[in-house]
Structure formats: C-alpha cells, structure tokens
Length: 281
Image (cartoon, rainbow, N blue to C red; front, side, top):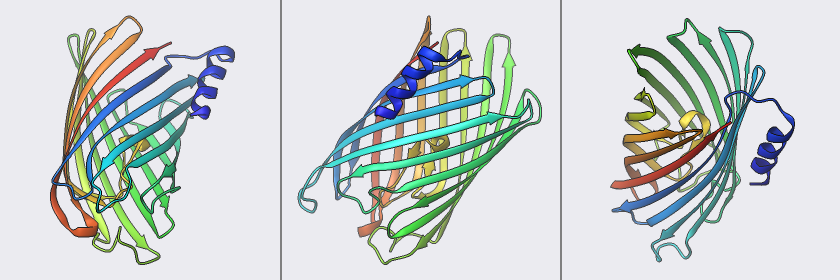
C-alpha cells in the first residue's frame, strides 16, 4: 500500500498531470457449493496518472475470505500489488509493461507469485484499436503463460458514446512440481469475452461476458489475477455509474461459475457486488 500512496502524493505535488485519477473500491463475494470458501470482502485503492506520453497505473488490494473449517484450518487473507506502465510513441503505437505481486496468501501455494507482462497497442484510427499482451506468471510449483488479444471499436450516436471490446486469451500451464492446484487442470485453455461500455452525458453503463474454460488467468488488463485452483467456465458482469463533478461512482455485479480443481467439485457459483469511487484531477 505504501507504493500506491507514494505514487499518489508525489504525482499530486510535483507533476503536471492530464486526465488522471485516483480510485477506491469495495467488493463483497459469496460462494455457493464451494467445499472451501463461504464469503469474503475485497478492499482496493489505486491511481492512474498520465504525464506527457507516459501512463503510470497502480493498485493495492487486500482481501479476506471466510473458509469452511474443516477442511481448512484458518480463514484466507490476501494482499496483492498491480502495476502498469504505458508509453505512447505516437498516435499509432503504444507499449505497456505489467507487474503483479501476490504479496501474501496465507493458504495457497501461489503465495508470493509474480506476473510479468509486455504488450503493444496499435490504433488503426480513432474508432478501431488493438492490443496484444504476453504475460508470464512464476509460481513456486508451476508457471503460466498467457497471450491476450484485445480489439476495441468506438462509436458515437448523438450524445451516446459506445465502446465494444473483444478479448481472446490463450493460457498454457507448465507444471514444474506435482501439486494439488494443477493436477486436474488442462494443459491449455482458450477463452474469449465480449464487453460493451456506454456513456451518455453523466451516466455510464457496462456489460460483459466470458465464454470457454480458463484457469490461473490474468484479467482486467492485468489488474486481476485468479491464482487459486478454480477452473472458470462462465462469467457475466453488468454495471452502472454516474459522474458527479470530478467524481465517478460505479456499481457492478459479477457472476462466475467454476470447478474447484483439487476435488473436481463442479458448479461452484461466485457472486460479487462491487462499489467503485473514482476522483479525476
């Protein structure tokens, strides 16, 4: 968390920023049919700072989850750090570098796992752009390689601004040591998603869905990591928000269905409600 606060303070005091923001979010999760988890909460704080041709983005996340005891002997506590640096060479080309650190996971073998990513964006015109990012995640017992291809298309109808996105993820798992997390996982996964964001005056609306199985995936442009042994096959999300002066308040609902890999426990449902507050400066 100290890295996030240092970034926010130093940027605010010493830099001339353009359309930058700080944000905080709260998420409540419930698990149905899980053999290990009952419910939990997630707290996050982040910053998105633009200086000249550079973008500095960071987030710190703390989460707690109430577990079923037995089989587990304690509740789950998590700390994660997400970093992203982007640089625009010109109006056509941008490069991005990502870093994720699972600072602390008091239960999972993915504790202290680290993810590195590098990507390139190309803008065909003001409406159409694409990004390819390659991620590499290093866990103690296995490694994960993920290739993301994202295509964005923007449109405007009167005052209604629309953004359509398609995302394709190809994930391969390299098992270095036998472990319970990957023994029932596939060697590779191919999953795709569609997203829509609409902006009308001070109102925002978004929805999205992912299809196809995935495990140990990096999500949300490198700001979400699914590092527990769960194989997801359904994800649906919907959200709405409103701008009030320099603040944006958003509400999201996310539904996911998964299999807990260690026990091949199917039809586990995860329902999440998220509240996000964003301040632009």
